[in-house]
Image (cartoon, rainbow, N blue to C red):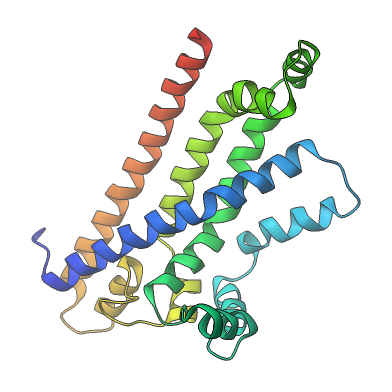
Amino acid sequence: MFELSTAEWEAVRLSLKVGLWSTLLSLPPGFFLAYVLARCQFPLKSLLNGLVYLPLVLPPVVTGLLLLMAFGTRGPAGRFLEDVFGVTIAFRWTGAALAAAVMGLPLMVRAMRLSIEAVDTRLELAARTLGAGWWRAFFTITLPLSLPGIIAGGILSFAKSFGEFGATITFVSNIPGETQTLPIAIYSFLQSPDGEAPAVRLAILSVVVSMIAIVGSEWMERRVVNRVRAA
């Protein structure tokens, strides 16, 4: 029952690839947004906050449609990337990674923001008083102390990417070997008369991977926290 076919393994491999790249793609902007929302005050902060968390409340199909309008072959960003860099995102696995990154970004930012807000600003101020510049205080105090949230945010984003369906199928369609990630493969198998068994296998595998991600996030958080406290 748990012996996966070639098509099933391809869906799993593609999901892991999309999840990894979407997480790596999200980390720099995710941490930047989390730091800005946690530490900065400016007039449009509420608007930025709303935009960051918008994918959590929007129907995923709407998010996928917006991505298609922006990054499709006729969209402004899509035309720019194709004309300047020769890169096509729509209906490619790179588009699936982009869709997954957008859907996982709010979870990543939330975890990182809470971790940054938990860092006592008096520690940063004390470091600067003792002669450390902003960058040194950031890399020696803020970043290490917020590392558990960064790790948790990355793992949560990966888990979300691994299970993303609505925005992905709307933006990049269902192309076996190119955009057919694990959730889309499950959907495809359920549309065929004899597809229940492979759909169940992939669903079980999805649950296992998600649980491993959650447990791994908790374990890594505790390990980093213990190291920071012991330092």
